[in-house]
Length: 410
Image 1 (cartoon, rainbow, N blue to C red):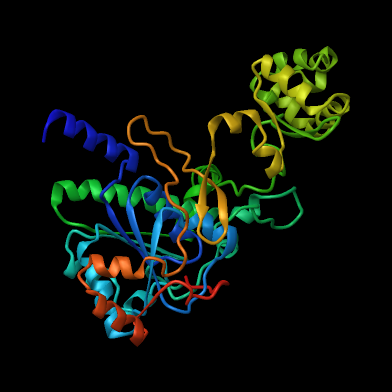
Image 2: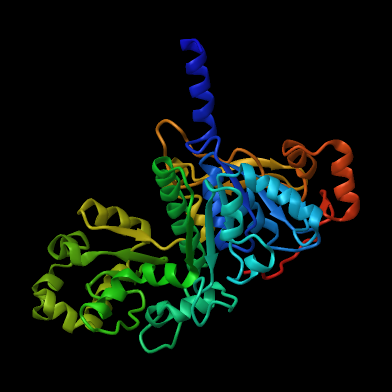
């Protein structure tokens, strides 16, 4: 290849992302597994999503967000024709990702042992609710159940108020992101060994690992963390306070004297109840009341400017519409717009990673179910007659034959 040709090829690869040329086979459902595959797709991997005809899943904006940059094929893996077509896809895949309950993969004959025997270079990724074995392995897992089991709900919310869930599906997102890391590490290991491996995590493992600070307070200090509401659990004052027109997060403990000067409250600095860190912790309720008496006299935006100018971290509490109107968020360009065949323009979140040479991107809209069935089957060697035969038998299906709605499938 000429030097100019090499540069052109490199430029095209960069446009497609860091994982250009990596083939991923995706049979995930709901949220955790699709989160992992979406990250691989955004970084340039070629993803084929395999779903059974007639099976619902997450729909609407949720599905649009999770399944962009993918192609869709409908196969009935319980039929011999559909299963054989699936195995053809496996033979050429680099990565396979599933998030069924642990026993389901064996009943479908898509387990690690079966697929790795067919393709020894395959990196096989799994997410389950509670792990691949153990007393809970057969249970279906969902985010809120895992939030409770991991301890998250015991440390969330105001003190003494009973358990509170986090406002996002955090164990799904955590498990999906951690599996992405594991798959990338396994691909790197494959460069040395020539062989793939099975990488798996669970909602429970991911959520316990995200407990991090609170977990080690028990493991090392033998302290059972409790609820702290909007205050930092161990540092004060660092929390959320009312202002004249809303709410403000302030890390005042990182520079108490500078903070007191910024809010023009020298009396707080001179008050013996607040003269030392220990005193401020002991008198936290009085200090919170005194701070809000001052902070409610001016609007949030004014306090944000004043307090940040003093080198103290602070920021507003925003609803989602205000988040995407924020000037820093707009500067970061956190969204991309693609055009969906049925639903028109879609503004979707981009991957929050910035590559200098191989950028991640939202390149294509989420597919309609079965939109690429014929195309993908042709790529693995089926001629037109064989494709139509698979469709006629129900072993494969095309666009429009998949109902909307949601069916749990983990």
